[in-house]
Length: 111
Image (cartoon, rainbow, N blue to C red):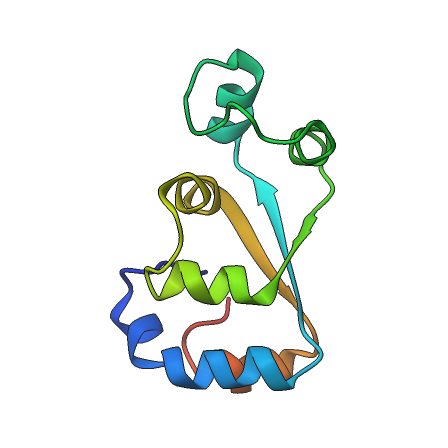
Protein backbone atom coordinates (compact mmCIF):
# COMPACT_ATOMS: atom_id res chain seq x y z
CA UNK A 1 0.00 0.00 0.00
CA UNK A 2 2.71 2.50 0.96
CA UNK A 3 6.00 2.75 -0.84
CA UNK A 4 8.20 5.83 -0.51
CA UNK A 5 9.37 5.40 -4.11
CA UNK A 6 5.83 5.32 -5.52
CA UNK A 7 5.40 8.54 -7.54
CA UNK A 8 1.74 8.70 -6.44
CA UNK A 9 2.87 8.78 -2.81
CA UNK A 10 5.46 11.46 -3.53
CA UNK A 11 2.92 13.56 -5.43
CA UNK A 12 0.49 13.34 -2.50
CA UNK A 13 2.96 14.00 0.36
CA UNK A 14 1.56 17.43 1.26
CA UNK A 15 -1.98 16.02 1.29
CA UNK A 16 -0.88 12.99 3.33
CA UNK A 17 0.96 15.20 5.86
CA UNK A 18 -2.02 17.50 6.30
CA UNK A 19 -4.46 14.62 6.72
CA UNK A 20 -2.24 12.77 9.19
CA UNK A 21 -1.99 15.90 11.34
CA UNK A 22 -5.64 16.88 11.21
CA UNK A 23 -7.55 13.62 11.22
CA UNK A 24 -8.19 10.88 13.71
CA UNK A 25 -6.27 8.17 11.87
CA UNK A 26 -4.15 5.52 13.49
CA UNK A 27 -1.18 3.82 11.83
CA UNK A 28 -0.24 0.22 12.62
CA UNK A 29 2.53 -1.97 11.30
CA UNK A 30 2.67 -5.75 11.12
CA UNK A 31 5.92 -7.50 10.34
CA UNK A 32 6.23 -9.45 7.11
CA UNK A 33 7.59 -12.99 7.32
CA UNK A 34 11.08 -11.88 6.27
CA UNK A 35 11.30 -9.38 9.14
CA UNK A 36 10.00 -11.94 11.62
CA UNK A 37 12.72 -14.37 10.46
CA UNK A 38 15.39 -11.67 10.91
CA UNK A 39 14.10 -10.83 14.39
CA UNK A 40 14.14 -14.49 15.40
CA UNK A 41 17.68 -14.93 14.05
CA UNK A 42 18.79 -11.81 15.92
CA UNK A 43 21.82 -11.27 13.74
CA UNK A 44 20.81 -8.40 11.44
CA UNK A 45 22.13 -5.06 12.75
CA UNK A 46 18.84 -3.28 12.07
CA UNK A 47 16.80 -5.64 14.25
CA UNK A 48 19.25 -5.75 17.13
CA UNK A 49 18.17 -3.46 19.91
CA UNK A 50 14.46 -3.41 19.07
CA UNK A 51 12.78 -3.18 22.49
CA UNK A 52 11.45 -6.54 23.69
CA UNK A 53 7.86 -5.31 23.95
CA UNK A 54 8.01 -4.27 20.26
CA UNK A 55 9.57 -7.62 19.34
CA UNK A 56 6.71 -9.44 21.05
CA UNK A 57 4.11 -7.48 19.08
CA UNK A 58 6.01 -7.71 15.78
CA UNK A 59 6.28 -11.49 16.10
CA UNK A 60 2.57 -11.79 16.83
CA UNK A 61 -0.28 -11.11 14.44
CA UNK A 62 -1.13 -7.92 16.34
CA UNK A 63 -0.38 -4.54 14.87
CA UNK A 64 2.10 -2.19 16.48
CA UNK A 65 0.76 1.36 16.74
CA UNK A 66 3.29 3.89 15.45
CA UNK A 67 3.31 7.66 15.45
CA UNK A 68 1.74 9.17 12.34
CA UNK A 69 4.79 11.39 12.01
CA UNK A 70 6.98 8.30 11.69
CA UNK A 71 4.97 7.20 8.64
CA UNK A 72 5.28 10.64 7.09
CA UNK A 73 9.02 10.82 7.80
CA UNK A 74 9.50 7.43 6.15
CA UNK A 75 7.47 8.42 3.09
CA UNK A 76 9.39 11.67 2.74
CA UNK A 77 12.81 10.04 3.24
CA UNK A 78 13.51 11.78 6.54
CA UNK A 79 13.76 8.76 8.82
CA UNK A 80 16.84 6.96 10.06
CA UNK A 81 18.05 3.88 8.22
CA UNK A 82 17.09 1.38 10.93
CA UNK A 83 13.47 2.51 11.17
CA UNK A 84 13.23 2.80 7.38
CA UNK A 85 14.37 -0.83 7.14
CA UNK A 86 11.76 -1.97 9.65
CA UNK A 87 8.93 -0.04 7.98
CA UNK A 88 9.98 -1.32 4.55
CA UNK A 89 9.60 -4.86 5.88
CA UNK A 90 6.18 -4.35 7.41
CA UNK A 91 2.64 -4.10 6.18
CA UNK A 92 1.29 -0.68 7.06
CA UNK A 93 -2.34 -0.25 7.97
CA UNK A 94 -4.04 3.12 8.27
CA UNK A 95 -7.14 2.79 10.40
CA UNK A 96 -10.03 5.17 9.89
CA UNK A 97 -13.04 5.35 7.64
CA UNK A 98 -12.51 4.28 4.03
CA UNK A 99 -13.65 7.69 2.84
CA UNK A 100 -11.19 9.43 5.15
CA UNK A 101 -8.34 7.18 4.06
CA UNK A 102 -9.26 7.77 0.43
CA UNK A 103 -9.19 11.51 1.06
CA UNK A 104 -5.75 11.17 2.62
CA UNK A 105 -4.17 9.03 -0.04
CA UNK A 106 -6.09 9.97 -3.13
CA UNK A 107 -7.70 7.58 -5.53
CA UNK A 108 -5.66 4.58 -6.54
CA UNK A 109 -3.52 4.42 -3.43
CA UNK A 110 -5.87 2.43 -1.26
CA UNK A 111 -6.39 -1.26 -1.75
